[in-house]
Length: 373
Ligand SMILES: Cc1cc2nc3c(=O)[nH]c(=O)nc-3n(C[C@H](O)[C@H](O)[C@H](O)COP(=O)(O)OP(=O)(O)OC[C@H]3O[C@@H](n4cnc5c(N)ncnc54)[C@H](O)[C@@H]3O)c2cc1C
Image (tube, rainbow, N blue to C red; front, top):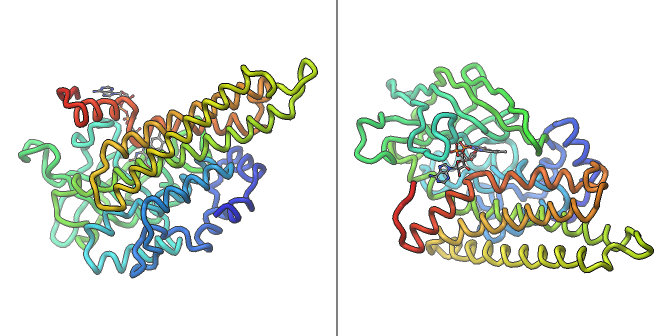
């Protein structure tokens, strides 16, 4: 992985950050190396490895300097289709997984909605059954890679909220073609990771064959939940990788930059924050691999996966911020890359779940306090 990533240096990522073009060459190289299907079972063209292996891979991608631009360009391939692997029919697995493992198709993940936010059960996108088809209409927001995706994994309501026993019921999951005649994809201008687009989706009468419904109608929320823990573990690993890239640059700059007749890295006020960042990244990494181990061994890992995402995002962000400060004014110049890392380090903090909601989850599920949201 490191060898592949080394072919895409700082100039490449700086250029992608400037022109906003999707890193096709990078993604192609990862696909050619056979890495995209790392978690997809061998029977469907993947390598059949675990989430711990995928976490090592994604950390290495981000740590190479590709950062979140590189990681997000392949993220969905790595674990996005987990609901199909676990809940899809044999026919669906044979049809849907091999093109993703081979990198022939790109997929996006369409859950978030403007009027629901983190309260997923309030999503308003509707899928109506009409004979052998569903017709989907609604709005999604922040959907990454929808500019380039061929397919989307989309969560929509099939039974109105008023007609279900629990709000988590009545949501269904589909993996289907992103037919642009019925889906308008409007890019959101954003702070960082310009190379990997995030978008508003306006869906109007998207025709979906029943064969594209994953599992049972109405159980989509359960299927999505199943994939959340591995995704959190991977996002934590990506954030840690980004932090490591920042720390490497900061330490190297601190050794070279001479002010007051000595390298700035000889000052403890420069050394100590960097040493702390290293420890934080290491500690977060242990949590990532603890969560990954539990997941790979079929054990419950909700608190650990959430903690891995939280701690990884915090450690990654702090490392990027410290790297900017270590560079002084040059930390603000694009040439030194760390300002790009800093902007990208906000993403794992914000998505796929906010730090506040993780704290709420730990307080409730681990510490037994009353549910607050
Ligand atoms: C770059 C990027 C890429 C993304 N890619 C995708 C994607 O590919 N697919 C997809 O489906 N989504 C994607 N998202 C969406 C992301 O998952 C959501 O932004 C995230 O889940 C938060 O939802 P929201 O923005 O609507 O926040 P809101 O739900 O509006 O929350 C706003 C703030 O209020 C806080 N808050 C709300 N309620 C409480 C409470 N009870 N207690 C404490 N705090 C609370 C939240 O923690 C948060 O800080 C992406 C987002 C970003 C920024």
